[in-house]
Image 1: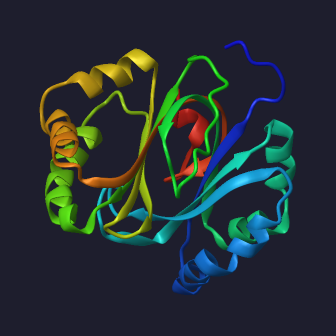
Image 2: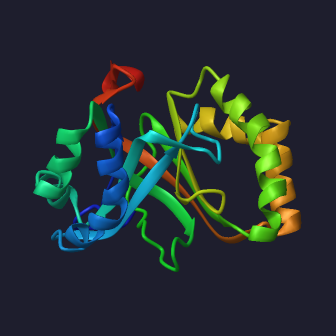
Image 3: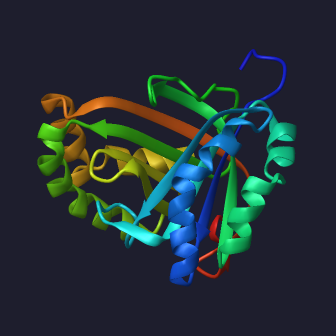
Length: 236
């Protein structure tokens, strides 16, 4: 893509917790882990996120799951940083966890007033899509009325290798993350008529979002387990 130098690395780590004592610990870390994460070398952007119930695309949080999204200077910073105590503590309390390593293909929009993703990669192999939005409070009800139909479409689509909905603030700050076999498969779903296309049209016409970001990634690596399955097997 005409750029030389280190390639930015993005990691999304998902954790699933069992007993309530571990779930309460994870909930507390949504506040307590912020300072340690700010001190990690090479970590330029980070978000502690809750996960929705079911397929994840719901306004109801799943107290057994959480996620950490990180944007690193390069792959070496990511490998070294993920071995630090703040991440080890999450893993030690979790029943299972997985990390998906990504390189940005394209990105537009902002997240908390920043543009965290730098396009370095070309499409190859599985492609991940991330959509993040701050929903205007006055539009929240109309937004969430459309979500069940969209969730059903994504959940019933056999082409989707993995999908999860996460967020910072229930109802208002939402992130959807999905992985597809290739760019064409993902684009075909986006073009399809139905609830998904209707929701996109409504959002554009009604200006539902105060802030939004759309990004596409190449899946560079993945390790760990999710729902009892090796994440690598899910992406094949």
